[in-house]
Image 1: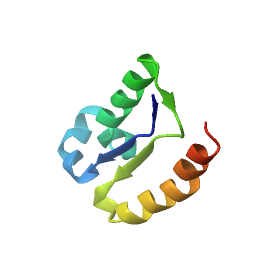
Image 2: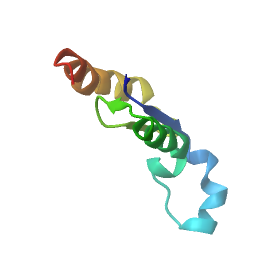
Image 3: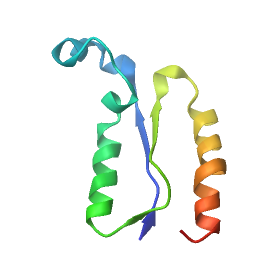
Image 4: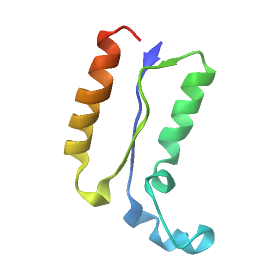
Length: 82
């Protein structure tokens, strides 16, 4: 099975937990479910068509990021049959 993952998180929701890990948050802090899904799909024999997109919805650029990712990464990968 070919797949692509968009991991969506919200850094604003993790601020109170930052003290337990570090003083900085990044997209990977709030996108752990997407990263887990990506690993599970690979372990199950899936074929990733392109790198996972990690989005932080608190940055208000979700639609722009997804559109650019689909255009630049997903569509070309699917077109070349990867």
